[in-house]
Length: 113
Length: 114
Image 1 (spheres, each protein chain N blue to C red):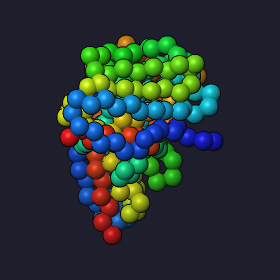
Image 2 (image 1 turned 120 degrees about the horizontal axis):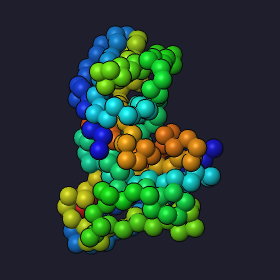
Image 3 (image 1 turned 180 degrees about the vertical axis):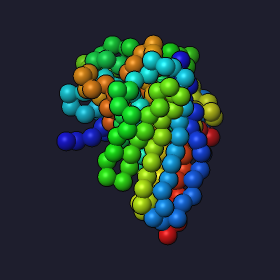
Image 4 (image 1 turned 60 degrees about the vertical axis):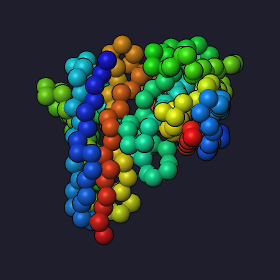
């Protein structure tokens, strides 16, 4: 099945700086890569996703880039704000069941004021 | 649009007891998922339903976990008997058949087994 590795596990940034989280995947056939944000005690929420036919997607202060050759994708948060503090998960679908998402272990982002 | 509903939000039980969780997906979402999220880890899929049929339960510990989705809407997940390692947040999610990658999660049930 799909194996998704996520780094770093924790990330502390100064407010206004950028944050970057990277995920690698194992199945070259994977074609969809979502990112979820989970605030403390709350549900995971989809914040951005990218499909394999594009290399980059932006939505205001967040962007996701995809390198299919190297099999990795990254989340970029610019001009970080305190409300960006949360756990971020990447995911990728499994070849055997493309409804089934394999999640990374998560990155805890702390934005320091 | 109403989101995915789950109950209870919290549950504390002793090991070897049984427990049940309930999920009501977003109206019209044919696909329903149950995930287990252990503290400090990403969600792990336990079971996936398409309408009222099971699509994938390969990671469900079937000796103690069971789930059903009668009438293709609400779903229940049961654990009997519970073990200490079952302590986790149990998340329900749903998606449209045509947009299967966009999964919407419920608030979860935090289970503590003592």
